[in-house]
Image (cartoon, rainbow, N blue to C red):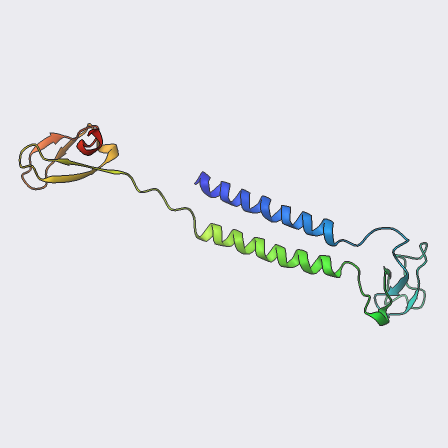
Length: 160
């Protein structure tokens, strides 16, 4: 069961690492020197960038609508929308991929190791017998002749 926890933790670390790199590469550059325009997110009115007005309420929207001025690098006419749009899309896709990987890991847990089997021969009838390694040095019975004997601590083939 601990192997499952390790796989989940590694998947989480890898996914969060990829998200951190994506965020650092795609996030818009902060600072007033990069912004040239502002637009209202409700009414769409566009104006030149003003550092003092960025993030405040839109002066042309009625108070009920309550639009906010969003700074952009390009004009809305050129297709300059929210500067965080690309970051949001990329992080959303990566989040879905990470959740998919976690679901896969949880629904396909690591397979249990099959126990190792050793071989020996019955001391009475010489029939070939296969037994689990953990039964070495314990008593057993031949299924053919019903002779009781002690399983060897290791197989004869491994000893040779």
